[in-house]
Length: 350
Image (cartoon, rainbow, N blue to C red; front, side):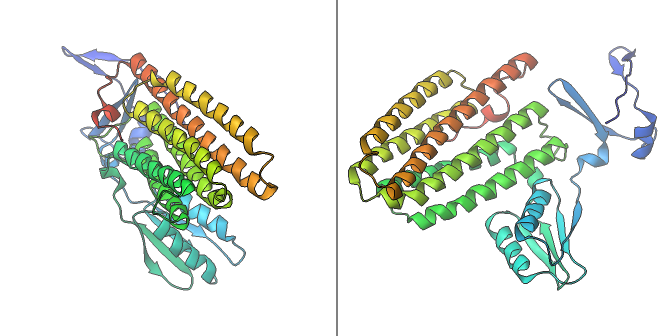
């Protein structure tokens, strides 16, 4: 990244001007009279050509061969998606492995919203992102992710205690729903970071980093919800144990709800209360282990430890979310951004 120093000049009665680097002007084909877009992002001003404010279609070709690992192919497609590419082409000089072909089809159905196969033959698969990320506010995407994760953890707690009507297998499948919204959120955040969004939606870089951290924490919480379900069946023969573990799970869920509401309401005062609830959850966890550690056999104890760890992780990641509310509040105070803007304009999830 090149860096230039310019002097601010004053002209007329109220206009300040700064000259643009000649190399940048020439590279973008600008001439006297050309229009540029000036975006204010907190303490930063971004200048870009007018045509760059219009969403552009970007293509990426991914070369694969017979030796390409399936997981590697999946990771490359996901990476291209979240980095904002609209056309993703997997191609080979020989032929596309049928296993890779079928796996990619399953991937786009389960985890990549808005992606369709628009072209396919023995040597390539052409994917097109049809969903317009730039037209959907990032706050709405984040709220959707919060609610999907809440649903997963809630279903996990109900499955654990046997009070839910949804089967464990169906709850495990909800992990795909979390991934779908998560990948879509990261794609939107990356595109917003590049300024590849509508001119009415300008996001500050530090806010985008905060939203990125929030998204990752939510995705991890969703994973732990699924982990609870996967281990629940093994300990369900002990009814009293299940009820006590279920209480811990619900406590973690309530902490999650309190933390996400704190983030969307910019309520940094909730963090101390959440800290206290986490300490109480840990004490209950230790007491529960001391009560059952000599009763359960190893095949039951290991799943129990896994469930308890997931409940604790959900609460701890939730505290991290509440701390993000502190971070963004301090940043907004420093920059003079009103608390009533951005996320606070919308009703918090409940």
